[in-house]
Image 1: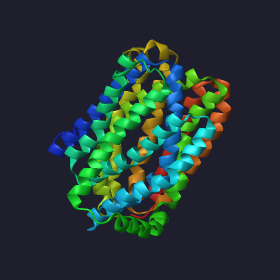
Image 2: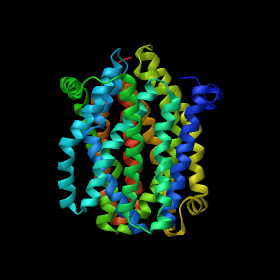
Image 3: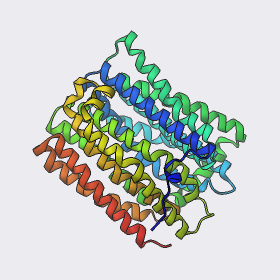
Length: 415
């Protein structure tokens, strides 16, 4: 059994740890402020429209970019990290030009507008870049630039949202536009800085290198592409079932309360995972040592996060009124079950770091396949019957199953 000490819980002993915790705390605070502004300025129905828009782009990035990015994140540990990063940046742009029109057409016929399509495409490119840059600075242990990449989009987005007070553009489209512009501005700036820093091989050279990496990337990421769909189904399908069985306003109420609970719970684990990833992805530790370290961090996380879960239960109305608004009060009870969901999902996420590091992505696929099948089936049955509580119970049960299977494969795998 891994040992645990109070020193593990108070992760402020090193300068790097302090900076990571600060950036994560600041980003969570900014996200909560943005949520408060949105729930004050927009109706639940407008926020529901925004929530459904963003789920489409998350599906796009989960399928196309996130799996390949995991491969390049591992490749960044090699001696050719600069060339690898440069090739990926241009390859990402190249891929967007190919696939973004397809997304645009599908989304338009699904019921979106041309304006929504444009901003969704912009957001897909910027989020993919931004995510890679955050991972790159994380692996480089450059936590100052990592903090800039994390915090800048949130600050800009709040500025854009505040402009509603002067423009009165109260629509879900305005929200997606502000999010797109904020992410794109920061990711483009940081990307150009990296390109200039590394010097630029020709665009064709970078794209050709990207193409050469595609076969091995897909061998690594193939299961993750399927996983991207399954992960999306687990994370966002409940919104569509609520829209089907209930109303757009209910989608907004559910999404706002779900989002607040998830942000707080992710704050409890985010800094730990950021600091842990370089150790697990690197080659200095043996498989056995990585396992011991992960188990130790899970115990630390549970010690840190469990009080948050019970605070959601005890103070749900006060928390909801403070960070959201009375318009969303119908869903304040959602805080507690969703925090339980994230307690289980985060523990499973620690195990996933190990699976990535040993290239056993098939285990992650198995875990999410079981979780998504359970989640979809329960959503269909329970949301129609129990409404919000049906969605919450579906999340709790499926996340618990994911955790149990992730732990099983973690114990079963080598090391």
